[in-house]
Image (cartoon, rainbow, N blue to C red):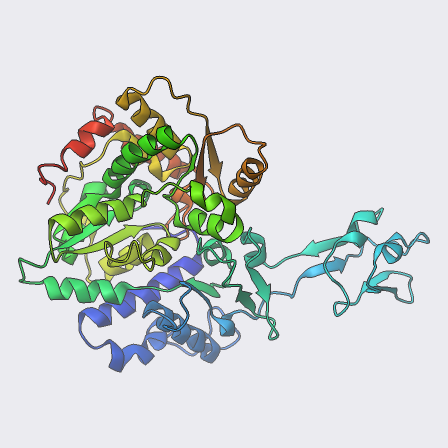
Length: 479
């Protein structure tokens, strides 16, 4: 019925679904150890060398589905038992080596890591190699190549290395929680913690209590997900789960675009604050640029703040594509306004844990935001929204020069150039994931088609200006 990009995602989903199913029935703790047997019921292994290893790894997945290691503040964790199939990687000599006389690789290596076998072919001593790449650069046959593990390749900020047991390890001082390693690991050995149990507990507490409302704030990238059903059916499904009201995070994006455009005109230069992974990257790598991060909170936090201030005692759950959002709600200035974050992967598991077939539901309306709030979901959308907000404010003299960064590598380049006075831009839009939020690790599917879906969804609200969208806030009629 629905489609994940990979079998790894589907396996993760099955664990999440069973954990949620048991939690709804109040018998998770006594039955949690049975989940691996539910998923791998027979004696024949389907993914690993033996069924016992499969189940051991699944037991670790269950722990992460229940919140993971509470002492580890990072929302990304490595399942070491699952991380043993990849080669160590590093520089290797291929069979393209001709055993030449020049031996340029030997001369280039300053660490004595290159020697030669009986056939005069180069050999690299891993214990001495410093991964500098000097040998590869001078080889006339390009016979020396660098092999990196998929997680290392995925992590563009070099937050992943190999530990003593040859398993992936995360450098907490560098990690920004973007989840690129989570999505790219072919064995699912790196996962984001799930806080579904907190959501289920909140919903249960709200049952029959009219003073305890639970709001679902859904990211605009939801328009590119759950493509096997209609968006209005997803909204109805959320209400069947127990949410009182479903609101577009895109409305918070309209609020941010309005405020951020004013701040930009006042200060003359800003970097965006919507992507928590980008904000974390600036804080950890460009401390001198922190003063230029917009003082506005993200659309999620901005809308959560509005709800909490106008409906005392309510609970707010954000649902989106982003693993870094799970870290954002731990921040002091955010955790007061948003209680829990879930991904689209987890929402699918929640639906199925209660046997809710959203394709059979009637449609509900989700009509809070403008076109510009909705296109925040893709790279360049925030810049377009800020441009529109400046126009709506009548600031005709301000010349907006945006730099929209698609992925953390482009963010790094833009920040480096700006810090050295080499970038003629007065607004840097930072998106850590390729494509923007539609490329988030918690998406069901990824790809170029998602951008088209977001733009199509945005066009449904073209008649609204940003001012029109946020005008509904003041009578509080969305509550």
